[in-house]
Length: 160
Image 1 (cartoon, rainbow, N blue to C red):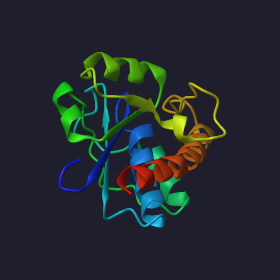
Image 2 (image 1 turned 120 degrees about the vertical axis):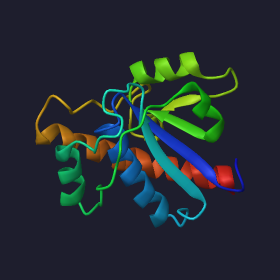
Image 3 (image 1 turned 30 degrees about the vertical axis):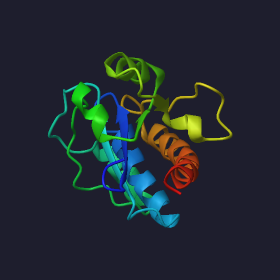
Image 4 (image 1 turned 45 degrees about the horizontal axis):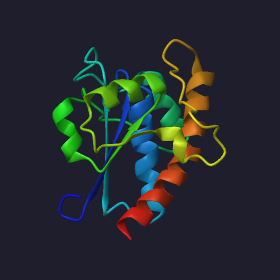
């Protein structure tokens, strides 16, 4: 932990759909639990195709429809030297988790985001909605909201 601030990075492939949605949802959930002043949430992608670009418009619209503010996001790429910046690194799916684990120092655990959802099966992923329609983004939002509650409970225990 740096200066008493707990730091989380949520990671997907391109950092334009799932992880920025998770970042926004998790920030709100942490605020609802009174943890927003003690926790920083960021997001990134394992790939660099979209670096500097905005969130996918469909993701942003879905967030806004449900009362979240998603504007202002700029995609970033997660790199090996970032591991020492974060207390918790959360992958959206097993492929991104495996890639992150291949970069991570031995003492760093990379968890699946949905591992914090008590109703999710072990190994459950957040599916990539990029090639689908609005229903995929709706499903992702529902999964993120459920898991975010578990992340907030975990963080509360971690920081006391």
